[in-house]
Image (cartoon, rainbow, N blue to C red; front, side, top):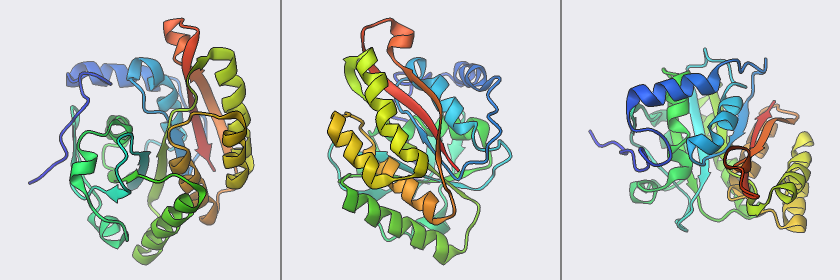
Length: 262
């Protein structure tokens, strides 16, 4: 059986399963925000820098969830939008793909585009650890403009409706400001994220452009917010914000946000 093998294990997160499990246990300890999010925004940096924030994001979904995660992450290498239709390897075991939803999605499958991309891979061990029975449908997003986000949202919604599935949650994989002074990152990122409180996607794009926020997953965030709003969500709640500088002490940082769409 063909699987998508780990590409960044040992770099972004531990390859050793015992080490990885211990780290994830530490990240999730004491994190229960009491939410049942339809979707979340989670960062995708190395676990020492963004793992705590990512755990806050996934904690917004009850650990009993056993359905399917549709993951949307940016292509850092410029590939077009595509899905993966194979199971994904993690050091904690295989996470199965959901063939029903994948088949219903009007998006081309391209396993080569997915094989080295970290934006989706770093999410999968969190899912395997907290939601061991869950399945995934990974979507790599190319063009991230407002129109492309809307089109992707429509296609995902159509697949969910065609399959008559309610056991689906959505993950937008994104970091926020990249390599700017810490105070600037916090101010500008929170300003952009503020537009998501009412799931105002056009305003989110406007604020990102106004402040030149170098978030790498603007499109995935926009798509997930539009999908969740169409399914009844009303707000985006910032659960936790942090920067790489909180760990490294460096004055130039990358920003990370955990957002629950409820």
